Image (cartoon, rainbow over all chains, first blue to last red; front, side, top):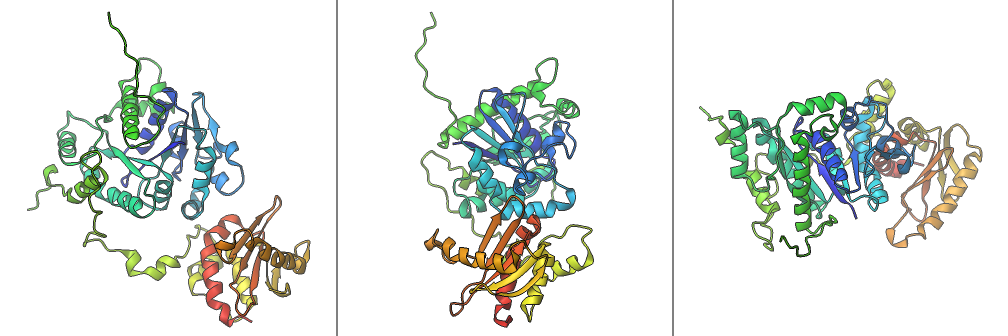
Length: 271
Length: 199
């Protein structure tokens, strides 16, 4: 059974899509069959990979019974990574899309039909705590909260936590918060340093791994690639996502999830 | 003057929730859940529970005025007759045709393009299938909606709860899928509210 992980934040610009994409790539490159689902009406995953707004069919077509799920899940050049894009959703119909995704069983049916094929299903959600985010949380086992290292994000984190708590208490008791992932961290800047100081000192559940603000993300976005796929020297930011994979797998195992990893090792001799 | 520095963030609620979500020690039980609603939050769902139940669905920009008017007033519709009711259903769902059949299969009202099987044939088959379909899950109660997705078109039926063993089926032929889904709750509620007045 898959580990279904939603990336959620009330605030825009926290790096949800960047985290979702690069985390999915890191999981897949580690050998885990991974599906990345884009439920964001913006279709940010497609944009991050340099695609046009109407390039890919996806979840929207599946929701309207235009195409079966098998025909909208896209393989990638990374054999262990598949994508379920948003689909060719007309921006004029975003309101209807939100209501349908929330009120229908589409998302849970999609998950049910594919979860045996994947170890990890990553769901990229839109900013905010509206119907789509709630739909994603209702089908997820785990949630990851990117937190931008800046004041507005810290002031608003309670909103997201409040919704998570409500969903867990009333709608999806299986939902577990993996942790808070600090993003766009710049420890050499006073404001960012102060925020991180407060976050590390005051909040439980902040992940050890954090994602620094770095030009490489802009470069990757321009080229329509995950950071690990950029040419040249392997970016340290890509290594961060590998560390993130290790950390969240450890947490998932601790929460009783199945990661396929084993803690058992045979004794080895050094000399 | 209020200190707006980083150290003045009010993280109390965040800390409480996180303490509850991350018990300090393995095996420790979670702390009591956060009391419902910080007092400073306005709960719209409590202020307007009926609004939450009959929330008008979103209408795409550029919809013709009659659709806008229909949708925004949808939860206040009153119909003196089945003809007006099915006309409203038709405009809401953009169906090719709508009809009402009673439990004997007789067509009481119809509107739109006549289906190949005729309204009578389609209505009669729907009525026959209702009783059979309820046997699929007898513990699930009365069948309320049936949704038949054929390769060429969709046929949807709303079955009213029986009164003195009499019920009606409102059939929609080829409704627009997204319109039908997003208006389903409103249609259900509106027909049930108007049922005592409909002949």
